[in-house]
Amino acid sequence: MKAQNTLLYLDGVSVSFDGFRAINNLSLVLQAGEMRAIIGPNGAGKTTMMDIITGKTRPDAGDVYFNGDVDLTKYDEAEIALLGIGRKFQKPTVFESHTVEDNLVLALSGPRSAFSTLFHRQSRDEAERIDDILYTIRLSEKRDWLAANLSHGQKQWLEIGMLLAQDPKLLLVDEPVAGMTDAETAETAKLLREIAKTRSVLVVEHDMHFVRELDVKVTCLHEGTVLAEGSLDFVSNDQRVIEVYLGR
Amino acid sequence: MITQWFFTHVDRRGGVAIVLLVALGLLVPLSNLLLPVTSPFHIPTYLVSLIGKYLTYAMLAVALDLVWGFCGILSLGHGAFFALGGYAMGMYLMRQIGPRGVYADPILPDFMVFLNWKDLPWFWHGFDNFWFAALMVVLVPGILAFGFGWLAFRSRVTGVYLSIITQALTYALLLAFFRNDMGFGGNNGLTDFKDILGFNVQAGSTRSALFAATALFLALAVFVSSFIVRSKLGKVLVGVRDAESRMRFLGYRVDRYKLFVWTISAMMAGIAGALYVPQVGIINPSEFEPANSIEAVIWVAVGGRGTIIGPIIGAVLVNFGKTYFTAAFPEIWLFALGALFIVVTLFLPKGILGVYGSWKARNSDHVARKKESAPAAADETLQIPEPQAAE
Image (cartoon, helix red, strand yellow):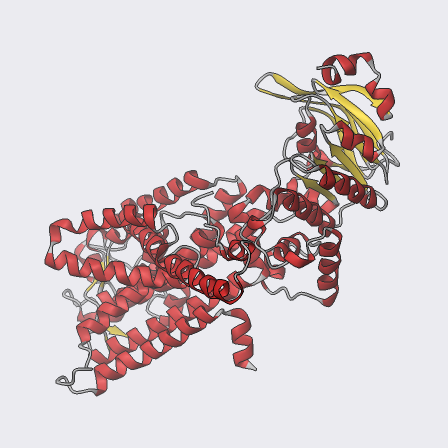
């Protein structure tokens, strides 16, 4: 089987909405431990691809395998999350009426059934993990703040912290630096590279400066299919990429 | 030990409410039974039953708040669970009448004799036993809510669509219970009760005991709700309320959480209905009226959604107003109720308790500023974000 020894394997995936082909015969392979940047113009199918991987959208055709032999098209969002795929959304979606700490408590990997959460008591190990993550995302001081009161950049960071708390094998990160200052962008690139040491990461981003800082293999999507793949220099010199994306 | 366990699961406000309810449950009956009628502190029996009725409404409001305030499920049909619990209790009370009915049939209730029925329908068996009936009070609403919720939540029916089908549920039950063939007394419902557990339902002492039971069960409902809300499960529920799909991507089976709290809430409403029926002396299909369920939503909104205690205040205040207005100015009550809902939605989106909360926050904020002229960040942390309506 071709999907063997890969972490994420998409082959010939297509999906259309009301006749519009959002994803068209898309193939993409991610190795374990790899970080990949996805670029492409608006409407290229980047977010739809994430929807397919996380079970929100079912593909009309094609294979989607995780960890070599897990057919993701057979699972729903919650099951896929528990398999070890975490997702950060384009618009930061933290739980605004919870404190920063409670946001992490909810994300923290552990039993997810109603009865186990009803009688849940935080263990020392869990408390330590939350302290660690708060330190990593630089929100230790604000742990008792309501998430609603965080700045935009802090919310993005909290969401990355929630991904870490989930302890996934694969992180899907959608536009992590949208609306961030240059300093925050640089910090985020550093944080993602740190995370990528132990996990696989798929980053969708428009900010070419940020993609350059990540310094990883790049895939350019256009009209739901792969236009070019390789190092950032290779991709950004591709004539078609310049035409549909960079040149405009 | 026990107090410590108690206070880890209940906040201060909940603790105060529970203590007050228990005190009320003891003092009101004592005043009714022990004080002479001439004493200014004597509470007449009719008032005991009236307040008892308000407290059963308050319990319905607490149950509704659990799903609406904390999980964002706006039920416009919670009156159905209340009425079902009431019918289960009503069936027990009917069977207690025995041969003392108008037609003096030892087994069949009057309405069955009147309809020329020969045998007791199968679903009336067992209701002569109090404990069986008490079990049905929670099981019938619980099973209905479980089945309904299982279908609705699994197919991800949310928001206004869910509200509409809950409304349809209670309306369908209304029509069904109106039919004589259903075997629940049709239009007239169940009434003319004599005994409960061998005590005369009309007697002042029984009324007082029923009042005490209502206050205690309401206190229990507050405790159970607080326990749920303050657990990690409660945090999951609020997460579902504010960002349902985000919760799924964190690996939570949102439908199961909703089903859990929905079923618990329906059982609570059923108990409230069962306590209501012996105190008002009748249960009939009008309890399934969609308007009743909507009124319950107003109680919760007035008192303060997502506060547990607020709905109790809302239910008691609105119903006190109803009792007063329908006697003094019967023609304007519905206008007053409508105006109340509009005023609360526009000016008090967090209800009475929300206003109290922000007043207190502002006050303590002033104190903090006076002390150290704290920077702007301080009052930011005191903001309480408003829970979203139905999604």
